[in-house]
Image (cartoon, rainbow, N blue to C red; front, side):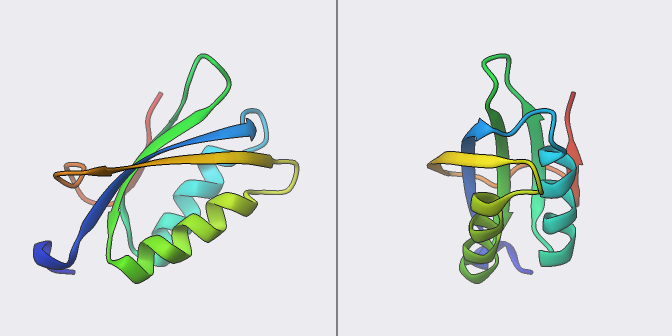
Length: 95
Protein backbone atom coordinates (compact mmCIF):
# COMPACT_ATOMS: atom_id res chain seq x y z
CA UNK A 1 0.00 0.00 0.00
CA UNK A 2 1.58 3.28 -1.03
CA UNK A 3 1.36 6.42 1.08
CA UNK A 4 -0.47 8.28 -1.73
CA UNK A 5 -3.41 5.89 -1.65
CA UNK A 6 -3.87 5.98 2.13
CA UNK A 7 -6.67 7.72 3.97
CA UNK A 8 -6.67 7.98 7.74
CA UNK A 9 -9.62 8.15 10.12
CA UNK A 10 -10.19 8.74 13.82
CA UNK A 11 -13.28 6.79 14.92
CA UNK A 12 -15.19 6.67 18.20
CA UNK A 13 -17.61 3.78 18.70
CA UNK A 14 -20.41 3.93 21.25
CA UNK A 15 -22.78 1.27 22.54
CA UNK A 16 -21.95 -1.97 24.33
CA UNK A 17 -18.35 -2.08 23.12
CA UNK A 18 -16.33 -2.67 26.29
CA UNK A 19 -16.13 -6.04 28.00
CA UNK A 20 -17.16 -7.90 24.84
CA UNK A 21 -13.78 -8.29 23.06
CA UNK A 22 -14.36 -5.33 20.76
CA UNK A 23 -10.70 -4.20 20.73
CA UNK A 24 -9.47 -7.72 19.97
CA UNK A 25 -12.13 -8.06 17.26
CA UNK A 26 -11.03 -4.73 15.76
CA UNK A 27 -7.40 -5.83 15.71
CA UNK A 28 -8.26 -9.13 13.99
CA UNK A 29 -10.36 -7.39 11.32
CA UNK A 30 -7.55 -4.87 10.76
CA UNK A 31 -5.05 -7.69 10.22
CA UNK A 32 -7.36 -9.44 7.74
CA UNK A 33 -7.98 -6.24 5.78
CA UNK A 34 -4.37 -5.05 5.95
CA UNK A 35 -5.03 -1.68 7.59
CA UNK A 36 -2.78 -0.12 10.22
CA UNK A 37 -3.43 1.87 13.37
CA UNK A 38 -4.49 1.42 16.99
CA UNK A 39 -7.55 0.93 19.21
CA UNK A 40 -8.24 1.65 22.90
CA UNK A 41 -11.03 1.92 25.46
CA UNK A 42 -12.18 5.33 26.67
CA UNK A 43 -13.17 6.01 30.31
CA UNK A 44 -16.73 6.91 29.20
CA UNK A 45 -17.41 3.40 27.82
CA UNK A 46 -16.67 4.13 24.18
CA UNK A 47 -13.85 2.71 22.08
CA UNK A 48 -11.67 4.94 19.93
CA UNK A 49 -9.29 4.10 17.15
CA UNK A 50 -7.18 5.51 14.38
CA UNK A 51 -6.86 3.58 11.16
CA UNK A 52 -5.20 4.05 7.77
CA UNK A 53 -5.93 2.24 4.54
CA UNK A 54 -7.32 2.57 1.06
CA UNK A 55 -10.91 3.68 0.48
CA UNK A 56 -11.96 0.07 -0.14
CA UNK A 57 -10.18 -1.21 2.99
CA UNK A 58 -11.73 1.53 5.14
CA UNK A 59 -15.22 0.87 3.76
CA UNK A 60 -14.91 -2.83 4.67
CA UNK A 61 -13.39 -1.99 8.05
CA UNK A 62 -16.25 0.40 8.96
CA UNK A 63 -18.81 -2.23 7.97
CA UNK A 64 -17.20 -4.71 10.37
CA UNK A 65 -16.98 -2.10 13.16
CA UNK A 66 -20.74 -1.49 12.89
CA UNK A 67 -21.38 -5.20 13.58
CA UNK A 68 -18.64 -5.95 16.13
CA UNK A 69 -18.09 -9.25 17.93
CA UNK A 70 -20.84 -11.37 19.51
CA UNK A 71 -22.20 -9.54 22.55
CA UNK A 72 -21.45 -6.08 21.19
CA UNK A 73 -24.16 -3.59 20.32
CA UNK A 74 -22.85 -0.68 18.29
CA UNK A 75 -25.01 2.44 18.48
CA UNK A 76 -22.91 5.06 16.71
CA UNK A 77 -19.67 5.48 14.81
CA UNK A 78 -18.28 9.02 14.95
CA UNK A 79 -15.72 9.50 12.22
CA UNK A 80 -13.17 12.25 11.57
CA UNK A 81 -10.70 12.46 8.68
CA UNK A 82 -7.05 12.71 9.75
CA UNK A 83 -4.38 14.64 7.89
CA UNK A 84 -1.70 12.00 8.47
CA UNK A 85 -1.94 8.25 9.02
CA UNK A 86 -1.15 6.81 12.45
CA UNK A 87 2.54 5.99 12.88
CA UNK A 88 3.98 2.51 12.72
CA UNK A 89 3.02 -0.67 10.98
CA UNK A 90 0.33 -3.16 11.87
CA UNK A 91 -2.58 -2.58 14.23
CA UNK A 92 -2.13 -2.49 18.01
CA UNK A 93 -4.33 -2.48 21.09
CA UNK A 94 -3.33 0.42 23.32
CA UNK A 95 -3.94 0.32 27.06
